[in-house]
Length: 488
Image (cartoon, rainbow, N blue to C red):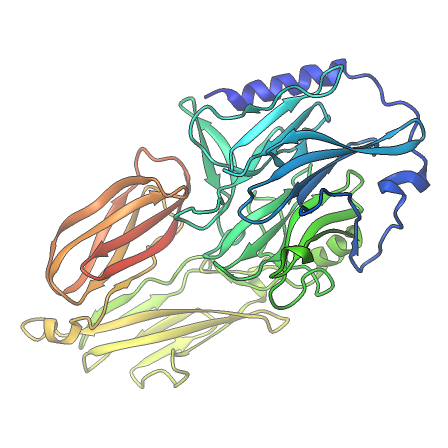
């Protein structure tokens, strides 16, 4: 569809017709005249209707004379609206009720359009008129749910795939148009993870992103990631303890002022009465985190290795397996068994070349843990299996699985084929299926009878667009799923 392209055209047209802002707001009246915070967050007082709280992101116009915010009663939202405070006739006036049934307002790049979100996670937009704002209209005609939709100065559109009741965790995504269809393309690892990435703020120049991450049913914190020259993102860093409170405290609803000085966010705990909008000075925090050490992360899962007894094993860990955003030349490597014991006598590991070598004499399976350590002693590890097998009749006795397992696909990211390994302890009919991040079934890799054993299936993603997908193994008491990333 062409909805995003139409919105972009409307934004550019309205930019040329908007009048120049009048006299600047006095410095002591900015931000409702409230005392500006430093590195410790302060409550940003916003008037609300009885039984409601000021939650989710807010929107402040470029001239500072309009503050839009949402108020809601609980989660999931059953009563909510967008309100506005305006600086008129040398004083703040309002609040004015602007949009009933919507929350999380966000201005377009020139304040001519206001993006909104309803309780079902559909994005709407309203255009500024000579008398106020037009009635909100659904942004996407198809049934696509987007969370915290926003547009940058680079004319790119972003949203999270998160929504309450989703069959998959949320991911920060870029919206792309493929064959007239709008799709959510995950921004990939390490920005997105097996946890839930939901509320976020993308800097206007896309130099950084602030986002909330939380595991299912657990409290969330705000993280920061920087965009690298290759277009990928740095390993996220959690904002300090002053912003992210420990325990059952949720921090979300990010908005950064146009001058980049202040972060506005929502914080609350188990009681709805504990939720408030906060603000904190953020520019110095962003600058300091840009130059502090980045923790290395696992980029590609090391695939399982198989070797016959009496044959030599030689395997070198690719340099791209672990990524250190400070530079991979800072990493040093070590290897041991996953339980911490030394490698068996037949297997050696060279840390300088990242090479495993050896000739096994007995069959069995070992789990090896490889650790990468950076110069600041921050570590990341990856565990993989080495299967030593006996060819012939005894092979099945050695490798019969005791439980269901679904390994990380390899390579990952991939284009267009990847290998998916899994183990089945009980014969029966099983299905290996592919889903998109919205939980929609894409295709089946296999759907057939399997005997007890270990299997490999090759998934060919030809015809699919880049993005994050889920693969799921289902069958008799089996329901396992993992994420994989297709990069064209």
